[in-house]
Image 1 (cartoon, rainbow, N blue to C red):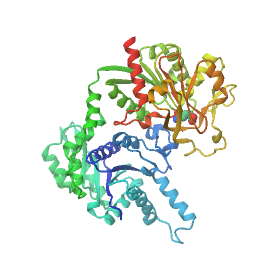
Image 2: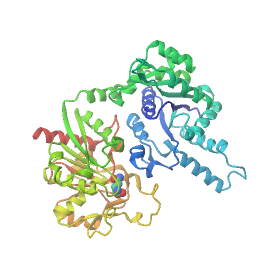
Image 3: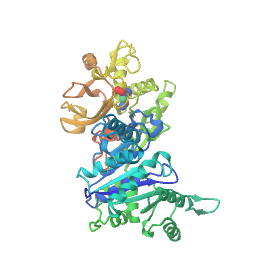
Image 4: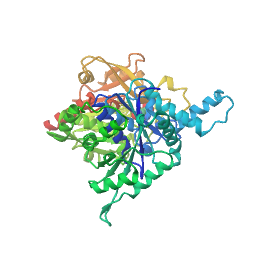
Amino acid sequence: MDNTKYIFVTGGVTSSLGKGIIAASLAKLLQARNYRVTIQKLDPYINIDPGTLNPYEHGECYVTEDGAETDLDLGHYERFLNVYTSQANNVTTGRIYQSVIEKERRGEFLGKTVQVIPHITNEIKDRIQLLGKSGQYDIVITEIGGTVGDIESLPYIEAVRQLQWELGDNNAIVIHLTLVPYLAAAGELKTKPTQHSVKALMESGLKADVLVCRTDRELPDDLRQKLALFCNVKKEAVIQSIDVATIYDVPNLMLLEGLDTVVLKKLALSDAVAPDLTKWNNFLQRHKNPKHRVRIGLVGKYVELPDAYKSILEAFIHAGAENEVKVEVLMIHSEYLDETNLQDKLSGLDGVLVAPGFGERGIEGKIKAIQYVREHKIPFLGICLGMQMAVIEFARHVVGFENANTAEVNPNSLYKVIDLMQEQKHVTQKGGTMRLGAWDCELQAGSKIYEVYQQPLISERHRHRYEFNSEYRKPLEESGLRCSGINPKTGLVEVIELPSHPWFVGVQYHPEYKSTVAKPHPLFVAFVKAALEYKLKK
Ligand code: GLN
């Protein structure tokens, strides 16, 4: 048996209580006490991964170094901890079943009937312990998606029960995140929903060791006492998690509430080293005391759903703090951008980011926005689809390639300046088949992008099927587009820029996935700086 300690985070009463943020905040505190921590998310849905999910379902699909398409909570884990996650950090029911069924087909169960218990639960336990057994971590925090009582979560809860029994109390604990709502009509905070969800947990054989209570106001002492009594936890293990302005405040709040000490005590681990949050608090200090403010437009088609652009929005927070600038992000719907409102929507902005995306919807609006910022010299950053649209815009309006397009939208276009990657041409399955994960990119000396990174070779994460069509590289470059970042292995163009423009950069990769509190992404930092310079010059 490994020496790793396991913490399970379950949720009760309702979804969206922020299990991911609580898990990440606790991990931050433990990391700040020199423990090696990682966080894992178990998702109860049957999709193999969220790569095939529409962002309207669960928000952004987050991509790891090893090319796993994962839940957006993994983004929080990396942003808080500044430690990479991997495929092992996100497990779905689909993946569990797929793996069990493949084993069955290989005859690995030796003629036995394959059942939820023990075969599915064993597979879940293996996946939970995979990270612990790697020897890289002292503590693994496993967040169980969904809410206790859901049919889908039952095998996970059962696996946790078995694992806790096998590992012993001091090696595996359960934190239950719940809601303590305020009823205006009664004028009081209510504990009953929490009592019920703890009861539901107990019916499945799990006892909560710690209760984290989401609330919009202070939990008075007598209410904590009541929760402790009815839910069978120590009073100091009733932790309040009050609504805050920024998720980055949560580690400090959990510290004040003593979540980390309660957890360490339960796990029989030392709390002798006090948490060092100096760097974290430096960031918070800068984040909360900006000297300037810039307005950046985020042009995309999921404006009603900020979770679809989670990593981009967080990267702006990191980059803003680095520059001591408040970045106000204005969501601009690409589907409704046209000549009649372009000026109105874009002229007051200090920078424009054109978002990643898939499919035809909103494409022409993105191209219009890019033409506007190119002609009006407003700082521009295009990410993935945003970069591809910048190439199309340039091909159409500067080079004169009429109706230039991407093969994704019009495979019959005369000028397919963005085309399907060679290795994608025979791909028939949708799931997990894009160009994914970390790839190298060589930056040209003297370019804007080189100035940003200050190094000749970088590695960034990808998620796309289409690429800059190198057949058009010559005519586009002759008209003033610079291809300043190239994949050294494949020769694919990864970065484009316009030397005639003060700050116009498009990247085929996703810089937002690698921005963390400890390491704000240099491209976002430079973009925010360019926006500020533009604003100050105006
Ligand atoms: N749809 C484009 C492609 O597949 C861009 C993808 C993206 O923006 N992530 O190439």
